[in-house]
Length: 224
View 1 (cartoon, rainbow, N blue to C red):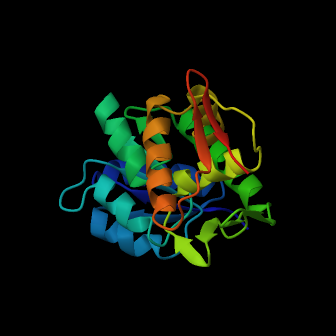
View 2: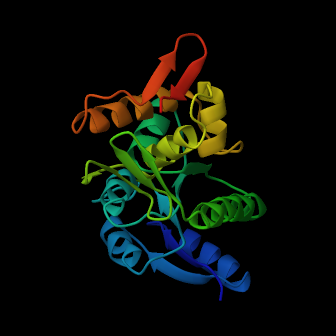
């Protein structure tokens, strides 16, 4: 059975080209032409989503943020332009990568496959780890503190998982970015600090214990 891909763009020609391309490649394609349609189609459990940012009404950033309430699959933004500020907003909304228009279909397919492989590896993990007050469910992609669910985005959970699985090991921002976002992502490591700040705030709502320690000039490490 092939992967299910959601393609959301307000330009019908782009949707038609991508739909044909991925159908030929064996994907089941879901189509959407605005943000509201994308939100509806996302409820059909796609394996990956291609989401145009500049759609009328509900734009891609808002749609992505709302999707993250019930969708854990990779979301790749399609955009005609990208600046550092846009990247931070997109990753904070829950996006995983950026594809800048015009793009090569070969490169796009390679990006899609890379994210699907990464997601498949993640889903292959099944253990639960206990760390102080925290319970980290790698299969469920969620984290609890004293029985209370901590509301995390996909990237926030992946940062916790990376650090918690390697306690005491120091990871600099560049290494975290490469491991979580991927070597070929359109972005930079500055988003890591913001994600870790958010993780700390969310954990601090449930416990006074510090789990992610800053090693000044070096990076971050997980404290058992």
